[in-house]
Each structure stands twice: as structure tokens, then as C-alpha cells.
Length: 392
Image (cartoon, rainbow, N blue to C red):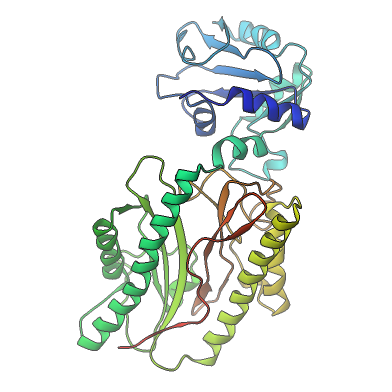
């Protein structure tokens, strides 16, 4: 299936862009291959593909790899010497003035900023204004089909069953005196994935006590610690079905091994829950009103709640990330900390909302997935409202 040429050109016209210049060498820009539905192949030389707002696309390939873009529509040009490349690129772009590229001003969105500085300089030297393709990318890469949404929901139902079962396994192990560690439990979760037809590109996070204060803690046989009564446990589980086109479901919950949760855990939990709920409510209300909101604004809402309670310095993680066929996808992130993500939140996309407070002795992250439809947005699965009591 070819790429959506008509849709891209319509979007270029709507945004007032004269074209979109996609470029690669050595497979450095996976976004370009995704947008163009371009398969693997030898890419030892630079290629350029220009989609004008109107008219036929233009291809520029090296004579050593003359057939690299033959699967794509458009007129083909070639080059051998670097000076010839510059001349041909000028002809390729023609009268276009505003050209979108995989570029982000000040590298604000590094996930999009894949065109190297020298190539951007070259296009500017040719008299073109380079603008970011960030919103174009998510329009044609991050939106889900109806089938993908259903696959997400199916994966969610499975993960929402695995998560409480994992807390129950901790309780059973403690009660029976069996040794259960972060790594052992992580491997137990992966076995549940296998039984339910789920897959994941990275193993889930099982983090106890101070390890839960590390947002990306990775349990291993070398760093694992045993889980015992009085311990704080964070579970971050993400997975998708083993089917082509499947998309991820990604959640984080927390629990305490014991009947009575210490007040400090409850206090931090309540702050993070309030931040999560404020962000989700902000998104839902804006989408229902037809308002245009951007990723950084959602982060601001969640971060404001955490700061008001005096824990701003401990919220060291963005509020959320785009979700797709990869757990971190190409759409807007809910981020105004690590990056300034000014991409629009658009229908057909999904992302996590996962504020957190990360302290030296423990951390709390509460993660849900939010899907944006036409005129409505909401959480796609279970929502944690209180700390799980893990009874051993």
C-alpha cells in the first residue's frame, strides 16, 4: 500500500507549506521510511524526495543507487558529484519557499529533528525557509486506524488482568515464604504475556522502595532486591498483541505490602493522582470544546499540581509520551520539561499521562493511556484510584 500523497498535499496546502522534503542516508531517518511506506534497501548514498503542495513529487538519487526510490511516484533526477547534488536539489525544490523537513527549532523536539544541520543549511542556502514537519509526521504516522484502536483495547484488557494478578503473586509469595525479587517477578509477568499472546520490545519495570524513585529502573539478576512486608512496589507494564499493526497499551500502578499504608505514601500518591486527573480532565474538556491544545500544555497542567504541593523538583519525567506500534511513538508527547513539545494533539492519536514524584527512598508514578477521537477524549483502560494493599 502506497503512502497518502493526496492527504499530504492537502495538509501542506492547509498549513501554507510549499512542500515536504524527505531525505536520508544510512537509514538515519526512520520517520521518512514510515511516511513514504518505503521498504528496506541499500542506502549508502543520499536520496531526497520532495512532495510539493501541488504537482508531481520529485526524486533525487545517486547514480550508484539509481533505483532506490523507484517504488515511489514522481519524476526522477540523479547526481554523482556533490556539486551536481546541489544543482539538482535546487531544481528539485523549484519555486517553493516554505519547505518542511524533519527539523525542530532549537532541537525542541529531538524525536523529529533528524535532518542534519548541514543539510538544513544547504536548503536554506538555496533560499528556502525550513519549517518543522512535526505536525505533519504525526498526522501521517501517529494516527490509529479503527482496527488499531480495537487491538489496543484488547491488549489493555489482557494487561489489566495481568497487573492485579502480579500484585496477587507478590502477596502469595510473601505468605508462602517463597523468594520473590524484582527480576523474578518481571520474568513472571513476561510468562503471562506469552500465555495471553502479548509481546513487548522491552521488559516491564518492577521497582521496589528506592528503585521506584528511578523512573527507568531496569531489574536484573545483578541489581534485584527481594520483596518483603513493608515494601513499596511500582509496576510499569506495557504490551501489545502479536498481530501486524498492533499498538501498545502502557500503564503504571503502585502498591504496598501490608494492611496499613504509611501516611507518607498516601500523601505522595494523592498528589500524583490529582496531577494525573487534572491533565486527563484538561484534555477531555478541550477536545469536547474543539479547542486546539498542544503537548506542552498538558504537561503544564500536571506539573502545576505537583509544584503547588512542593514537589516540583521531584517531578523529573515528562507527563506523557505518544503511543503506537512502538511504545514511544511519533506523535505529540505531553512534555514541557525534557523538551518543549508544541505539536498539536490531534484526533486518532493516543498517548500516556503519567505524572510522577521521584524521591530518594521511593517514587510514585500513575500512568493511564488517553485516546483522542473526534470531539471526545478519554482513558482507555483501568484507572488506579487508591494504593493497592498487597496482603501476604
